[in-house]
Length: 124
Image 1 (tube, one colour):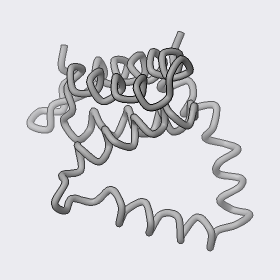
Image 2: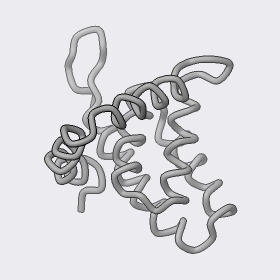
Image 3: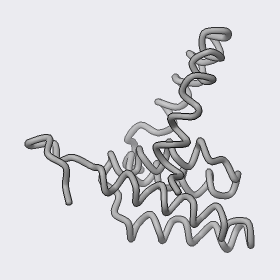
C-alpha cells in the first residue's frame, strides 16, 4: 500500500480546483509555508522532519505525503525520519503508531525514488 505518491495523486485535482476557487487564500498559505519551512537557525531538513511528525499527530495523510517527500528532498535519512516519528508516539499515543507507520512508509517510498542532484539518476 502506498501512503506517498498515491495520496498526493488523489489530492492533486481537488486541491487544484480549490486553489483556483480561492487563490488569495492559497497565496497567503504559500507565503506562510515558505517562511516557516525556509532555512533559518533550523535547517530546512529539520523543519520538514518536524512537519512530518506534526502531520502524524494530526493524522493527515496528505500532510504526511507532502512532508515525507520534502524531508527526502532535503536529505533526511530513514533513521532521522523514524526517530522524528517516534517522538509522536510520546506526544500522541496509540494513533501515532498507526499514522507513524503510514508516515514511515511514505518516507521510505520517496526515499527509494530519490535522485542524485549530480546526474539525475535514481539512487538505489
